[in-house]
Length: 115
Length: 112
Image (tube, rainbow over all chains, first blue to last red; front, side):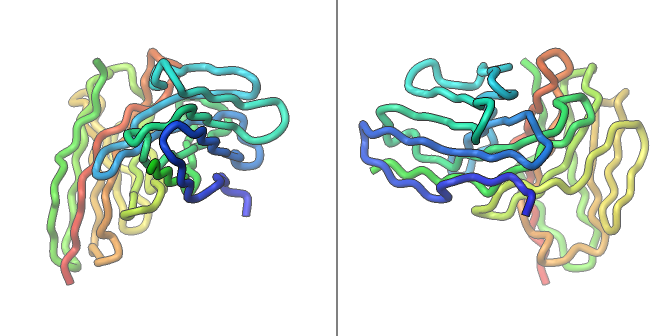
């Protein structure tokens, strides 16, 4: 299966712990996007990365959240000192070129629950 | 602020009918338009993409684009209960790395 992979699918953390979410893009894709979706709400853009570069992080909270997409390995979304309000579904999408007609393909998501 | 607007619904249609989903957008420079379907608890999956004015058909789905009116729609013919989902409209942000601007989605219920 050459689709977008995310792990873990479900993650439970206590307040104050760290959450690490991983995303492996589709084969041949070098553009990764992270989104957050709260229950009964729409997709909220968080960050757009290419290999080793953050292109746009305008949707990322200024504190506690960070993202990377290293030369080797998956993209990582890291949330430090989690709070209950961080509980949400986090989706990763990938695309091939980032151009105007490029299509984003989504992974299955990581459901984060903060106790 | 650039926006994509959709009626939240729920839109309820009987099985076999045509479901019409609408989306307006504010960025005149947008060139790419996408419809995604999202089942409850699942991730969005691409239904259609459209880049030129007019209609684009794929099976039971037809996307319609009118750039002058800044309007894009999705028609689902012969609606089936399995089409019941939330339909998300996404439009590229021409001035901002071409990331997508997302609508909040329209909930569609197809009644047997």
